[in-house]
Length: 467
Length: 102
Figure (cartoon, rainbow over the protein chains, first blue to last red):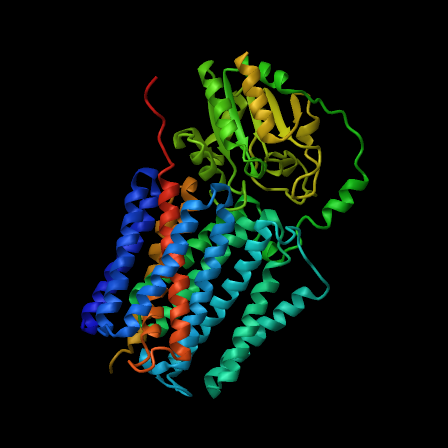
């Protein structure tokens, strides 16, 4: 049996190891070692917990059994999941953290003696407050993540679901959560605890349904943050330093990612959370759309243009992920490089369905990470490049974000694709993107539209280049 | 007068938020997806609470309502720990530098 002080020191060590795990991600070279620090921290935390309980009775076997069951499921998923499904996976994992927090809170509420928190019906006030916060945030994380998962998986429509009185309803529910927490703490009633949980599940659900598919990067980051705060809440209840440190780390990590994503769209956090974006503009825009001339071409035209270029910049977007075109794209780039053409990739912060989504897909296709650039790093290079190859991206290249203050995406930082000598646009049709607005780039003199599936088109271009 | 231990925990919490803030800003944007999966894995250190809850029963009654929730939480957190770290490892293994073989 480990003394309380000694185990507290070990929890602190595992907290520090978790900090180092995140620190390692500052560059790909150190990242793998960082991940090992994280694993080590986890092993220490779990071992210390066993040692401090010191009860290796039959219950212990069941603990190992459940770890084994969960662990094999987790490992199986981790090895089998395709990289394109990473946003769904992360959303799914968030929901599990949320639910685990809820379960721990329930357990502590039912049997506070086990945690030294008092007796049922007479739980220490501070612990009860912490417990309710942990449980409520955990429940919101769970149901919110489930909705995000369903939307990303395509089981539920990705378009925003809005109804009249949505915002007042949400506000009332949020206020009622605060009142319920207060009442729960003053009466210690277990009924109120269950109601609090139910209402928290409901609000998590209601908060995410009005948010559309392309705003998912913000939603996932936000839920990431929530899962951290839920863990921190439970950490306070259990008086556990490792959990408090981790909760704070994860909480601020998710918050920063949401901020970066919002900035990438030049929208406020509240604008995203209130939802409904892109639902109204679309209908208004389709009516007054006049027919403008568009130059469209085939794979041979594209191959000809690129063969005569000396530098090409690739702009991938969500469409590339949908078409699973990353491998075909890399093969095309290999062929270009054989012809001594300089190729680089430009990634917009909100490309894809989660932060860093495009980078992972390109890494999967064996694209070296030092050929992949962020918006600020590469935006000046477009004016010197010969060809921009836009594959599956749309709104993030739309010059209207700079020119038209009326546009819903006005002020959003965009990739200056228009400054290239010529632009190749791989797209299935002329339909507007998520923001529901037309892209002027389609009608520019130097733009060639390649109407096709992204994967098929890149394969065809590679063939044409080889000839 | 003695200081409530809660204040110490609160200090750790607040300082950790600041540590998190600066550490996360230094994460390169291309690793934002692994960042999310690894934060996911480490937040499952909540398994610590789940283990205490699971072992809360005495030797005659291993399973009571409270400990069953504990065991369920152990399984959920274990999915996340193994899944989160392994998928992060898998992703990070793919990030390669340009080969210098030209």
